[in-house]
Image (spheres, rainbow, N blue to C red):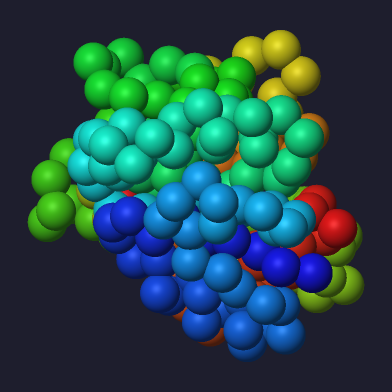
Amino acid sequence: MKIGVLALQGDFSEHVSMLKKIGVEAVEVRLPKHLDGLSGLIIPGGESTTIGKLAVAYDLMEPLREFGKTHAIWGTCAGAIFLSKDAKADQPLLGLMDITVQRNAFGRQVDSFETDLDIEELKKASDTDHPYHAVFIRAPIIESVHGQTKVLSALEDGRIVAAQEGHLLATSFHPELTDDTRFHQYFVSLAG
Ligand code: GLN
């Protein structure tokens, strides 16, 4: 199976490395034709306004929306914002996933942090029960989930940081910046 990584801006190469590490073929996506033959797509972290503007410039908006109707897409951090239906800001969004996000919800760069999360789905999928170490960099929170979307993980204070709507996945944090491949494996299982 082949998984694409949207490679317009942000830390796409780290996602490519993670996919290779778990034995999955990774394809950098910059043009609509690069979506052909993919089973799923990861949208990396970076700057959601920049990713959105570049996606408009490369005529990727409609092809990505079409792709997301039938294929797995996982947005991490800026990617989660871009995937959402509502980011409470005037910027291009795919509008695929029924979540409302709040950008930069934890403050500025210096307020970036790491924490351990309990994620039941990962424990079930991987047969290990150690917590998932999550890296937050100028992260959004998922303020609310709607429709069929379920919460995968929240901080102790209840703020949502991971959610899933069928084959769509959103995380506030950066699973590509750790050695833990469980989230990538989970996504690949959704795509497969
Ligand atoms: N702050 C960025 C945004 O709003 C997201 C940061 C990230 O992806 N690490 O788009």
